[in-house]
Length: 215
Ligand SMILES: [Zn+2]
Image (tube, rainbow, N blue to C red; front, side):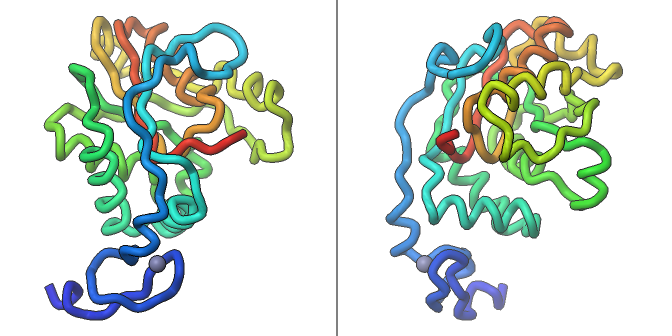
């Protein structure tokens, strides 16, 4: 409780302000929020499209980028709660969802980091919506940092990386599944996750991300 009354430093500009949030009002005002769901036809993915629709909360600008990097490298729960609540209240997800899952990390990377920021966000969305959250997907192949690779190479590297976990193969049949991630670029990660879910029999696959980053 005391936390609410102490001055905090804004994660983005470093100014002090009196709130338990980690973002000052001036920085919050700089975030460019989007409106409305996108069709997966807008994605520039390589190969077939498996994802049906997606929502993105905002453009990946310096403010949101800073918050997401903090979340990714510190896993602070209050920050995940803040961003997850924004995601929920802003996107007003327009789908009848049966199951929520997060984009998984490879077990090796998960053990290095100790948490998965997409899972933290998926938990908040599940609490807000009452939709059941399950770790439906696994990442079977360890992909290296793809920053240096070109567009098409990165997308090809994701081919077959994700699979629906054996124990959930029956659970996803005929269901509408929502995939949660922090950042979306081309949409190929979501698309490959959707592919894994549809191969297991999911009827409809939608996705939501905090930010869209130009590739
Ligand atoms: Zn600030």
